[in-house]
Image (cartoon, rainbow, N blue to C red):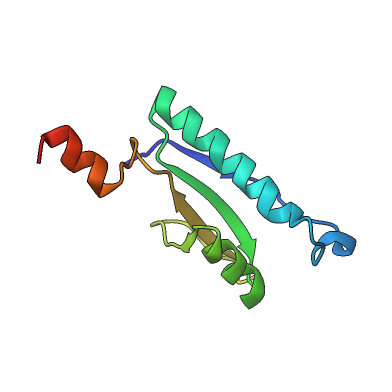
Length: 105
């Protein structure tokens, strides 16, 4: 089975900026995920995948940004990296009160 997806082949932040107040890594990943969401509305893309270096702090950073560790049959991990997946939200998620208003409740 194949599912439309995007892959982030490389993503890195220079050591001088990793702890910087600008949070450049978060800004970059937010921009990529925003682009992925826009694209998903046009072509039905469902996921964003990346191979994160298998360092606990980095895997946690990606998890904090919405990614989770995943397994794909046939994908071989080299131990140096871990496959991570971000599920692109489908459709617009309305607050509960908006849903109730639209339903006339």
